[in-house]
Structures are given as structure tokens and as C-alpha cells.
Image (cartoon, rainbow, N blue to C red; front, side, top):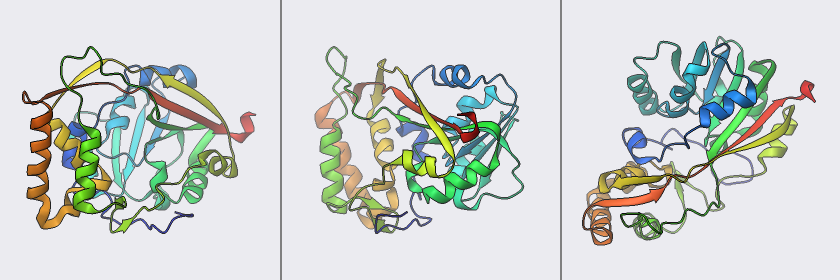
Length: 279
């Protein structure tokens, strides 16, 4: 990853997979329909989901394709994806880094990155993915809408105390964001547009899929959310994990004695990049 001191290692998401599905807030409803409308997806073609994690996005989009391949370097994530997708015969799960895609995967109609591209050698991965897309293919980067206001007024339970949780994590792990065996003093890289343009993509087409519906979260959901993050992966706490979790649950109990929390689902933001010959 150019421009930072950080280098990827296999512990980045170690131990987070078991917490991911419960802890992460789902993508906005209507995401699949929005992608289908923008790209003419009709149950044919092939999807490559790069950095698939436990299969969240690949499984949500599987009905739009004849075949889906989910790729992730973390063994725990692939194991969770296989369990979650056991009843979905069109999906194949492959443990591999995006930088080292197996040459026998074939070609694809669409490649998706669900909040994963920033963890990769982006120039290499963009060029590699460009090479496995069929003529007229596209790349879609999907994430929560950053900077969105999600008011909590009128919700039945207190909001998850994210600021307090962040302070607690820093108390245990230090002020600089952790990432695998290293640190991210400057955060993850930006300027995705320049990277994808260099790789031969044109765009982007931006789509926002509205969120906003109220969600009820439990204390267990909130704990899982913390342990699903690379910056607070369970292994980073080592022998202090029980103490951290006790303090975390204490904070949650003080915030909401009922153990229930409310928040509004974030909107999903999609950037679609097409092969340059479509200009």
C-alpha cells in the first residue's frame, strides 16, 4: 500500500469473522436492485467479489448472476462464507489475496469491492481485475455513505455509544489505529479515482441507495461490532481481552440498562467504473 508505512499481513482480520455478520450493520435495502438496474443484471454473467469477507455482498447479489466467486485471504472469513452460503450452489469461495488471483478463475461481468479496496495494493489489484473483466464489464466499489447524518431523535432506545467505545479501544490499544501487526498513523489511502483511471476504467457513475430505517441493536450486537473491526480485532487485546470486554459491556450497560440500542441504517454508496472502451 503506497503512501503509508503499513504493510498487509495475514492477521489483519484474524478472529473477526465470527463476529462480522452479527456486528456489522447491513447494506441499505434495495442495493441489489440498484445495481441490477444500473448494469442490466438479469441472472446471467459472472460476479467476482473481491475481499468478500463472510460472503455478505456475494450472497446478497447471487440471484443476479449465473456464477459468483468470492475471494478473501482470511481463512476464517472463507469458512464463515462457506457456512453462510451452503445452500447457494452458484457461489464458489476461494481463499486468496486479490493481488494473487488464481489464473483459472475465468472472466467476469462485474467485480465488486465491499469496503475492501483500501486494504489492497490498489494499482496492482485494479489492473488485475481489469484484466479478468469481459468486454463491457464493470467494477463497483460499495460502502456505507460517509459523512451522512443519521439522526437518533424519535428512536425507542439510546444510540450505540460509538465515541465512548472508540475512547475505550484507544485506552487499551493506544492512540494510533491498529491494523494487523502494524499501525495506520495516516489512515487508509484515498484518491481511488486516480487509481482506477490508471488501470483503464472510465467513470464513475455514482449511486446512493437510501438507508434511514430504524434498527434495534443489542449489547451483544455492539460487542460483535467492535470485534469485527480490523482496528479492534480480538487478537490485538491479547491477555487483556477479558478486561476490555468487561469494560465495554459496562459502558453499554450504563448507556442502556435494557441492553437495547437504536440507530438508523446507513445509506449505501456505489461507484461504478466501466471498461474504458465504453467512453
